[in-house]
Image (cartoon, rainbow, N blue to C red; front, side, top):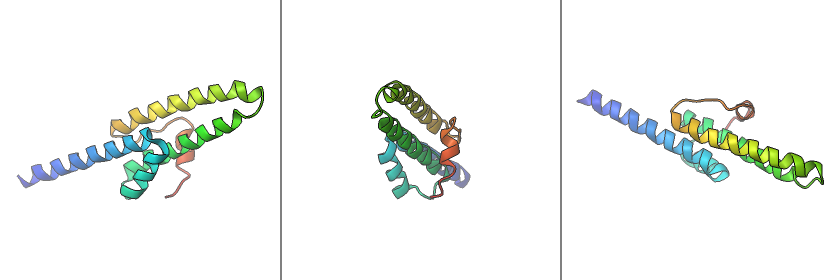
Amino acid sequence: MVKKKEKKEVNINKNEAKTYAFLATFLSIIGFIIAILTKKEDKYVMFYAKQSLVIFIAYIIARAIMIIPFLGWIVAPILYLAVTVLWIFSWINALSGEEKTLWLISDFANKFSL
């Protein structure tokens, strides 16, 4: 019986980690802050929280590029689309239970040491 409880606790913690990882990615910067404040010691949650931070920064960069006349009006919508697609993939990956990398985003996220 004790072994079953231990396995159940591990599954609960894994499900809890997946939930926090999903919230970190779905809520973007707010989710990142929640993850930092509540699950900083959880490697899985922080993996996706850092990706969420990078996606938020990419969105801010796309927003700043939009200010540039003509070039920004062309490039910014493409960047918005790319960031949105990566954001949605981060939700799916966070719910998978595995640390899956996102193209370009994970490279920058791994450089953060929190």
